[in-house]
Image (cartoon, rainbow, N blue to C red; front, side, top):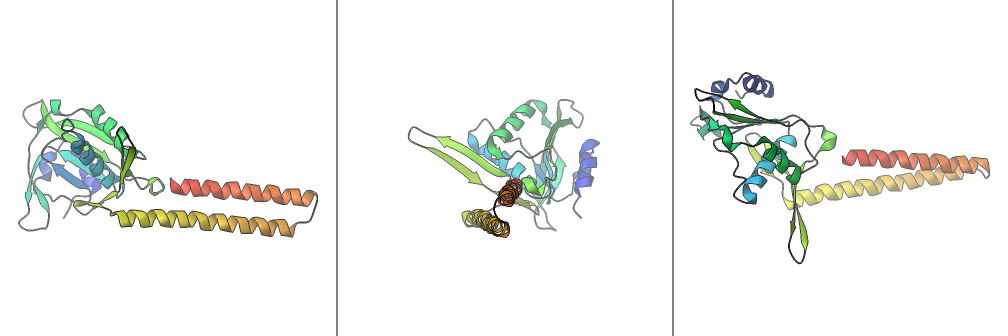
Length: 233
């Protein structure tokens, strides 16, 4: 049975990482043997942003770096084989946070990045990244990067979500469909607002009543517009 998010929180807070040996990677857990290679171009940065976004778009979870994994003989997926602590010099907490600021929009809230000593050598340990469950109104969390050359500026956008023990990217067709649904909903709501304004104006007569109707319809438009913006996140 896979460990729960609460189980992982207890294991990390007490540094009992040996309890994870034999556990499967899951919806809430991604175990890695090596740090992200931020010094080798954009691939490592993109991989880190992708992993964090996948948990933020799902139900939250932990990325734990300092474990050896293997393909399970019994279950589908990877299983933690042993704890392999890594030297603290390979982790820079501020660098991790800066990359998230550069690569994710909007920013997931409450992310914790901690290096935790483990084992007989005090300079070795496990890097624990906790992505808490996010407010649905802030989703989706997108991977985005602006690429500029001498002739043009391109914006790259991607959406990923954690499913079971792997990260699933969404195709351009799915992203297009989601955007189109959002635009269509906005147009439909604005059309309904205009109809309501027309009915209110027709209901009232001239003079002060007409002015009150205009004020009421203006307030109504502002409130619904605010709700639309809040729904967009």
